[in-house]
Length: 189
Image (cartoon, rainbow, N blue to C red; front, side):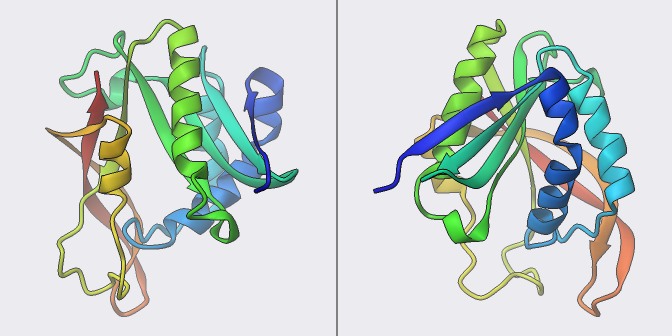
């Protein structure tokens, strides 16, 4: 089996990775359940906010020397905290594994590394958001399996806390429109 290496990027290295991360986000979140239609200009703006947050990081994974994926993390922003205390939680922004490297344990390894790094930054609790879709959503691919079992195996529990975000999403017709989406917090305390 190829060796897995996870590197932590922060500061200038993280800032220099904006376009790569933005493209990965657009590609990954275009898929179900997010159905996101992104633009690199929006990604740059959103990710620059993230990269300018003290203690933020990106973990990049390499399998056998080949780039395989990323995970992002930052102290929980007050803007998305809802009833959670921003001082208590480190937020895992996304975990993206390139399609050709999926189902090899890279996603869980990235999450564990972000958790380790969050502890080094003074946080004992971690969280992330996941979009909620009905089980019978018309754009849900046949055979789709939500990653809930992976998150539960890593010690996360789905909370009752919900928050709404708007983004440009694909419709059944293939057209794109601005839509509201409910997202749920998953917590590890």
